[in-house]
Amino acid sequence: MSPIPITLTRHIIQTQAAHPGATGEFSSLMAQIGLVGKMIASDLRRAGLINILGTTGATNVQGETVKKLDEISNDAFLKVFQYSGLVCALASEEMEKPVQLPENWPHGKYMLLFDPLDGSSNTDVNMPLGTIFSILKHDGKGLPLESELIRKGTQQVAAGYVMYGSSTMLVFTAGRGVHGFTLDPGIGEYYLSHENIQIPAKGQVYAANEGNTQKWPDGARKFLDYLKTKDKQTGRPYSARYSGCLVADVHRVLLGGGLYLYPAEVDKPEGKLRLLYEANPLAMVVEQAGGKASTGTMRILDVEPKSLHQRVPLLIGSKNDVALAEDFILGRK
Ligand code: FBP
Image (cartoon, rainbow, N blue to C red; front, side, top):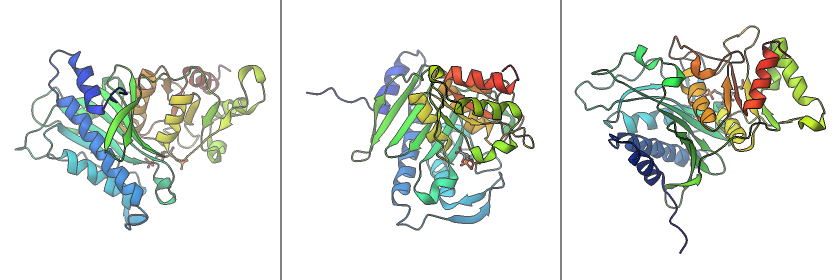
C-alpha cells in the first residue's frame, strides 16, 4: 500500500508537536488560510462563467482600479477570519485601515497581513495569480493599534503564498524550512508535494518588467545588460520569464533558481511592491529556502517600516544572483 500522503493539517500538527506550549492556534490559522485559498481557487476556476471578471469601478488605497476578483478574494479572508477567534488584526492591500474586529468577540494572538489577489493585471486573461500572507504575533492585551502591525520582516512568525496556476499550491514557512502543498481539487485537501524546498544558489532566469528599464538607475540597467551578455562560463545569457504575477515569478525561481527584480526607479525610488504584505512574506520564504531578498542596497527583512502600505524596491531569488545585482546597483561592479 502506498504511503498515506501528508496533509497540510497533519504536517503542521507534527511540526508543532516539536514545540512545547504550542496551543494548536497556529495550525488552525494555517488550515483557515488553506480554506481561503480553496475558496479563491474555486472562484478563479469558474470566473468566466459566473460574471466575476472585470472591475468594480472603485479605486483602492493604492490608487489602483479594483477588480471584482480583488474584492471577492478580500471578502474571502474577512468571511473566514473576522469571527474565527484566531486573529486580533486583519490588514489587506485592498483596505486602507486594518479591519476593526468586534471588541466583545473572542480574538487570537495572531495578526494577519495579506495581499488577497496578487497579479491583478492577470485576472481577466486567465494567467497565473496568487495570494500572499504574513503572520505576526501580538504580545499586548486587547486589540492591537495599527502601529503594532507595522513591524520589521524579521518579526514575522510565519509567511507564505497560495499560487493559482495549473494547480493550486500553498507554500509557507514558520521559520523551520519551506514546504509546498498541492491542492487535490477532487478531495479538497492539500498534500505535501514539496518538502523542505531549497533554492539553487544561482539560476538562469530573470523576471522583470523590461518596459521600465529606461526608468531604472544605471546600476540596475547595467545588471540586466550583464545578464543578457553571452558568456558560457557564467551561464549567460539568462532567459527572461515575466508573468505579471509576483507570486508565480517567485515560485519559479524558488524551485529553479534565478531572480525577480522590481528595482527602484529614478522618479520612484520606493519602487512598486508593498513591504508588509508582499516583500516581507516572500523574503521570509526565500531566505528560509537559502535565497536572498534585497531592496538593492539592504536586506528586505531589516527594513524599518513606517506605514501600512509602504512600498519598497524588490530583488529576490538565488543568493548569488541577488548579491550580484546589489553589486551593480551599489556601483561595486
Ligand atoms: P498587485 O498585487 O496589485 O497585483 O501588484 C503587484 C504586481 O501585480 C505583481 O504581481 C507583479 O509582479 C507586478 O505588480 C506587475 O507590475 P507591472 O505591471 O508594473 O509590471
